[in-house]
Image (cartoon, rainbow, N blue to C red; front, side, top):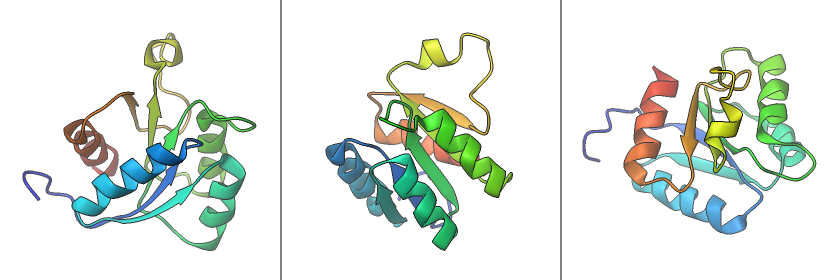
Length: 125
């Protein structure tokens, strides 16, 4: 487990690229987390309405509903939900100096496992 100090979490991973979902699921499972995946915002919200998650990790660039819109939808259901957003366009998303609404931590793609762990620690703090 290394230096993670994170309790085992129930995580919802949302990304329209199946290989990203699989990679994240594998990395998180290595740390003992219980991971569900969704390939789009609508699917993610349907799962979110059925069960609760300790953490949501969503991609920003997805067709139909982008990650920031998904974050808004989740926040309207649960304002305390920790959300980590992953994006290849971090600079563009933080032009104002603020994170997208509801997003606790933004990590740049591509990232390594330690970046993901650090983001989780920060989001769950």
